[in-house]
Length: 472
Image 1 (cartoon, one colour):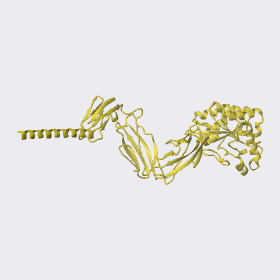
Image 2: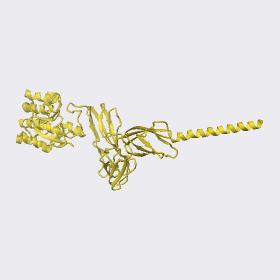
Image 3: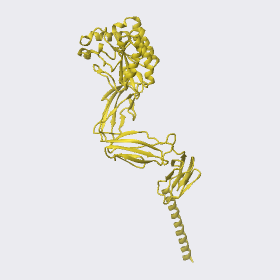
Image 4: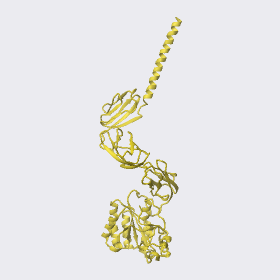
């Protein structure tokens, strides 16, 4: 009897052990086929179907709101109507957000370049919606790239390809991809530069014409001095120095050392380097009656310009007041010699220094640009002007026509980004033209700047004794 009791007890223990092992196996299987609740979300459009991406062999599916979304035994999810619902996939709970069917789809890039071997992932989106599934991709043109179901592009050979993304209901958008060689060298728009504290800057990456690199990274080695973003826009943070480095996808790099200094009075901090700019310059003044009209027009329109001053014209009280007004309101002062009597090789060192000394005497600020009389240059001028030499590429001929309307239309006809306009602030007709043309140019999308601002926001460092006709 005792032996039989022991046998029964052993059998019971064995059965209980089998039950326990099976229970543990079920738990492990559930843990392997799903995770805990609310760790996944899917955004779909009405009428769209979506295949649950995991193996469905051991997963049971269930929809908690079949009016919004259904799911079959194979894990095919169907969006029925707009709203939010939840489905179960094993132990996993999936939030499904159903939006209206897309009416369009867009890509951030309509055209771009890549280098052979480079990878980039497209990010299509439906405007005004969080819809984000079911995109498909097709290629046309050269066999320059491959693209997978997730929009990941791999550049495989030089050429041009059009990639079209489609939604489940056939909304489409396209982008053109040009594939070039991997860069073997790159450069930045300057090997060194100066930024002004409080004023944004921009640096440009130059890649050889037959090469490309979309995913060029750019960084600052000291973000406490300068910050830089993916658009190569620079934000000075504090006075000091930092090195900006650009690196292509294949490891080729170039660097630029940038010094941050206090902003001078004639540089405005809030201009947009991405918008067109045109610089106005005025020779032969000041002449209080007309110069003040010009100053009024620029100040009214929140614009700036460069005045090339004739030194001996500043002794009249009203003209001296013009110089002080220019300084107080952020206009750039330029040197146009002391008395405008000498040209080219006849210009003396005293002609140059006499004007500079007079401007310093009046305002405490010397000229930061030089324009030779008549535009004639000489070695004496180049070696002793002490500032960049600024000529022009838009000549209004206001001194010749003395016709405000002709001057107005000539400026509009020849206006271009990076242009430098030559005028004279001693003629009423020039003042009239300025009063009319400045608001019109602003309406046309231009920022009206002085020469120093034009150079600064174009990322150009102007050198003393070097001649500039325009700055692009």
